[in-house]
Length: 469
Image 1 (tube, rainbow, N blue to C red):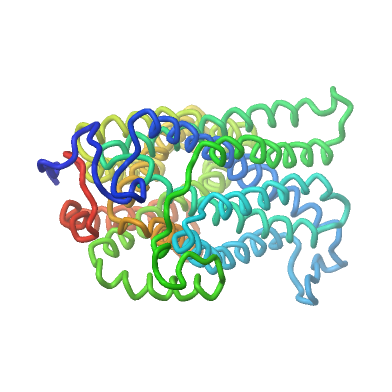
Image 2 (image 1 turned 90 degrees about the vertical axis):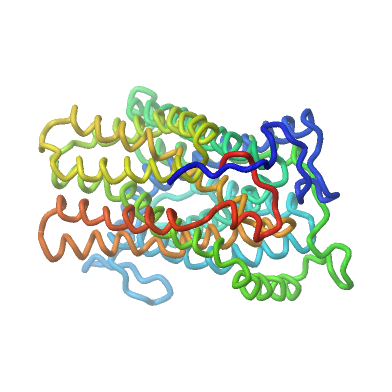
């Protein structure tokens, strides 16, 4: 598990590669300007996942569906009987399925055309508009709510694919861990700030003369407006590079046909890079564990530990705030020890944290906050360094295509961890057993990542590697 070193790029090296499309990276000043602009998309979009998906939309859309339900508690979208209480979960599942189909196609078109900014901008503002439109979600408009959720979540995922694909182009190999970590830190800081403001507004809505439903709709719409305003910065700062096929006959187009052709070529091409595929499989496993801990922690806290809603909301905020520090701390550790070794260390920490959750005493909010603090410290860093390490394993000039596969490996298997969690609870009747079952994802992910010879994987795709990786 030692750090891989070689006489590769230095910390400030002007490496050759696909960074600038002309065979090298931009100068240091231009890179810093683009990197600062790039951070702001994390700042812009993170409020959607925190305020909208994590806190406000689920309970509110469920109440809207319940208002539209028949006497048996069912709504009937497209004539299909659906329990009102399941409507939000089904809408999220549909959005994930559609995003798995859309993301690779958008990534292929972005790389083929070399016009990433228009594609990123279209999906960013489509998602922001759908989120802002949630202000009109009231009464029994559950169909409107489901449609807006699907559009917003698919757009969110697709824009993130293109956004992530800029990382190998705006940062030298030696800079990527730090740049990715700062981006995640920006996102968590933004999510914490807006969520705290939204919660303060929601809890004080009566004193402001606003009813509860209107307060929720204002919080939802504010996330869309925040997304739209701050997305302007990266779209102005980032610059285009020539597409991977810009010089080829018939290349450079943004047609769906060309995108499908390129996507098929990417899937065939992935077989040439088995080490990149091995990393994706490792990421699939341990990230599914991470995502399941995040989504099921509130259920574990409320049902098993007896935590009230105020404690749960406080824990969510604590995770968001400490994830900023965690992302920056693990980014600094990666500079010293390498990204792979730091991720492996974080997976050990995740295993210990989940194990601690198994023995956590019920009815003790202090210990629940300690658990939330531990999650926050490893959450941001694990995600940030996984992104930057994968950026080293992507063939130059095909960043968006390969980052779409990265997002698919994330979202396309997000059912696996919850399934294991749910089955364990069904068989044992214990949420403690359900939470400890997630250890298998971190252990398997650890050993699979351990087997990835990262420096050899970087060389296989024809990219330059930093001194420590």
